[in-house]
Every structure is written in C-alpha cells, then in structure tokens.
Length: 217
Image 1 (spheres, one colour):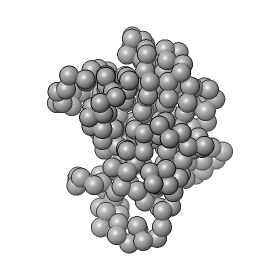
Image 2: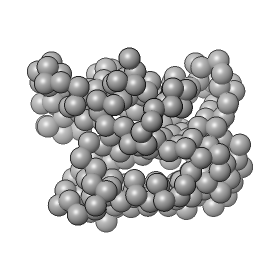
Image 3: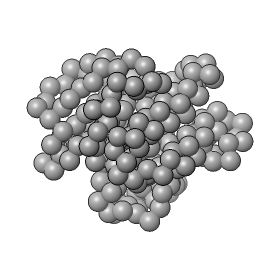
Image 4: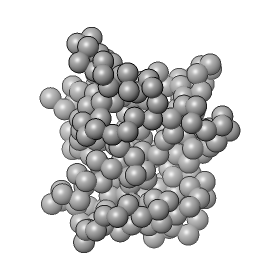
C-alpha cells in the first residue's frame, strides 16, 4: 500500500507516520512537510514543500495512493484569522482536490475536531472553519472519506504544551477521562484509529470522539 501524509510534523501526523512505517502491508509512505523531520527509513519518501495552498507539481506524489491522511492544523489564537482559515480550510481543500484528481479511489482521513459546525455559523473560528473544510471534502465525492472529531487529545508522549489551557487539560486528564467517552482520547488511540479505519469500515463518515473509541474496541 502507498500511504500519503500531510502534517507528519504534528503529534497525530507523526504517530500515523510511525505506525505506517512499521506496518508490513505498507510499501511506501510519502510525507509532505515544510522541512525535514530527520527520519530515515527505506519506505519513507519525504517531500519538502513550502506552499500547501498550491500542490501543482506533486502529481506523481498523489498518484496511486491507497490511504491519505490530512493532519495539518494550527492552534486557535496562534495566527491571524485569515491565516487560520487558510490553513484549516484552503489547505485541506487543495489536498482533497489533488487526491481526487490523481487517486480517485483513495481513502482520505481528515483530522477535524469536536464541535465542528457544518452549518458554518459558529462564532468560534475553529468550529466554523473545520465545518467549512468538512463540507468541502464531502462534496468532492472522494473514494472514501472519514472525518475524525476528537475531543481533548491527551499526548501520551510528553511534549511542550502550546499554551496554558493545554497544560491545564493535561493535568486534569484523569478527571476528564472519568466524565466519559465523549470528551477525551489518547493520541495513540486516535492515530491508531486513523491508520486502520478502512479495515473495519464504520458505517459513519463523521466519527465523533465516542465513535472513534468504539471503533477501536
């Protein structure tokens, strides 16, 4: 199988990269990144690409893909609203369009988030723009599309948290976990589900946090 990953420098994309490289059924993993990740593996084809709003020139990269994972994202408040929308919506749309053109039967997973608003009316930029991206991808009629909407993602491997709230969530995770399967998921669980979703083929295009955990059972 040929696996394509956008966003392997992030927490979930990095785990998907790791799992894909260790999967004996996978013959090639293509990772599109802005700068080298410093990973060496005979299966890995690392493509350095600066502008994710224009993927012209990467036709061969998107050709004969079996599974494509889009995990590019940015934290709310980290960039301007215009750039936040560009990264969240435009990058995903361009990626999906290129995949549809070159590998029309491929399965795509899209890392969205809990609360994504497909009505596109939420006052919260994250919810509104994730909903826009979901709608655009659904309309493309890809070979198969699975939209993942995790709640709080607990980093199994400790990291430098991006802001105070993520530090707080990590500290409170044992309590958050007690509130039920709707609100949180481990990073390893989410990445594992995204890697194997097509093998079990859930009967849902949009997988909420509890759906993801149920799928893993």
